[in-house]
Image (cartoon, rainbow, N blue to C red):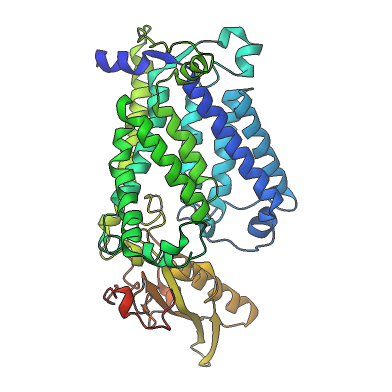
Length: 454
C-alpha cells in the first residue's frame, strides 16, 4: 500500500494536464457553437414534444420555453471557464452536470463521443488541473503549483486506454473479419479525394478493417512506452484525420487525438518549447510524494478502483444476453461499439388494434432512426398506446410491430416478434424474448441481390 500511495501522489509536471484541460474546454466550446450554428438545439430539444429515455432516467426532461438555449449558453460559458482555468472546480463540476443532463434527455441522440466526453469531464472535475497555466493560479497564488499528483494524469490515460482497447476488441468478430461493413462503407465513397478509386479493392478494404484493429489493440498499449508512443501518435493523426473526413462523427476524432497527447511525459510542453528555442531537452526527475493521510489515500484509491472496475465491466454486459449484440442491441450502448455494424431497415410498421371493435390502424416509421433499436421500438409502442387512448378513445389498444432489418449485407429479417402485443411487455434490463434471434446467414458481397439496401 505504501508503494501504491507514493506512486499515486508522486508529483509530476502540471503542463500536460493543463494542455488537456485547455484542449477539452476548447473542443466542448466548439461543440456548443455548432449546436447554435446548425440549429440543433431547436431541432433536437425544442421542437420535439416527446423523447426516448434511458432506463431509469425517464424523469430527465428538457427545459421549457427558451430554457434549452440558455442551457447551452451556460454550457459554453462553463467550457470557456474550464479552458482558462477560472473558478475551475465549480466550472468543471458544472460542465459535467450540464453536459450529462443534455446527454440523458434523449436516448435517440446517443453518441459514443458524448458518453466519452461526459466521463472525461467528470475525471477533470476531480483532478487539480487548475494548479498551473490557469487564471485561478494567477489570481490566487496560493493555488499555484508546478506539479499535480500522478493519479490525476494516469486517470485520464486509463480512461483513454479502456476506450481504445474496447474499440479494438469489439471489432474482432466474424463480420468485421470478413470485411463487413467496412466494404460497404468504402464502396459508397468512390469520390473520396485521391484514393477513392481504390476503395473497392479487397486488399484496401482489408488494410482498413484489420488496420483499425491493430491501431487499437496494439497501438493503445504502445502508447504507454516512451520509445513507441510517438510512432503511435503519428499513426493516430492519420487514422483520426481519415475518420473525420470519411465519417460524420463530430468532435470524436479531435477529442481522441488531443487526448492522446497526455500519454507523453507530463512535461512534454516544456520539452517542445525548449526544442523550438534550440535548447536541449531536459529529463524531468521523479518527485517525492508528500505525506498523504490514510483517509485521503483511501478515498482517492477507492474511487478510482470503483470507477475503473465499472469502466471495464459495463462494456462486457452484453455477454449476459443471448444472441448477437449487433442485432438485438442488448448491451450495445456504453460499450465502445463504435462504427461497427451497418443496419438497413426495409420495413418498420406499427399496427394498433382495438380488440373491442377490431378496428386497425398502421403507423409507418421506416424513415425514423429509432426503428432499428428494440428498446426504443418498445417505448414508441407505449407512446402509441397512450395516443390511441387519448385521441381515438380506444380503451385498451394493442400495439404490434413489423420490423425488417438487414445487418451487414444480410437479407432482411424480422427484428421484433410481430405477434407480440408490446403494450403487455414490461421494460426492464433483462433479456427481451420478444426480440427475434438473427437467423439470416452472412452473404458474401458478390452474392447479394441488387435490390438489397447497401
